[in-house]
Length: 166
Image (cartoon, rainbow, N blue to C red; front, top):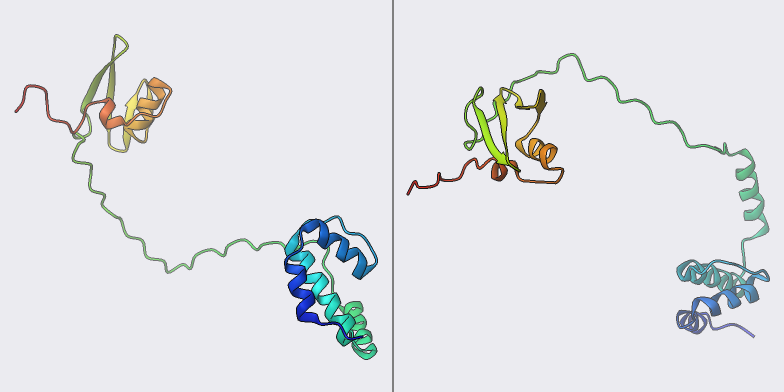
């Protein structure tokens, strides 16, 4: 008696993963431990169609076996090649960064009160020097001092109108 494949597939769509595992065991005559519905649906649908319409021909099976035997199988993926060196003709150009308008010029000492102490940060050409160490940003200095993320401009009160100026 021919199987109605579309009806079978519609019934599969309504099944739970547990029911699909049972159907898989019925169709393939072996159990499965997977609970992946999509995989179970595809495998069962393939098997139902193969049973109803015929599987691969013997000639196709033998050819697939031959191809599998002669194929170079890798047990490990190929190694990634290192990036090639850039060509010698690369042109370089110096980009000028606009300094932040909130910052005073290099050499200026910025002070800020913190827990009864007065913090002193010197602005240098490529960063901010505090306690003998150069930091890349005022926020990095503020984090080193407080131990938490703090906006450096707010912490050192830069870029804000001075008190009493109005």
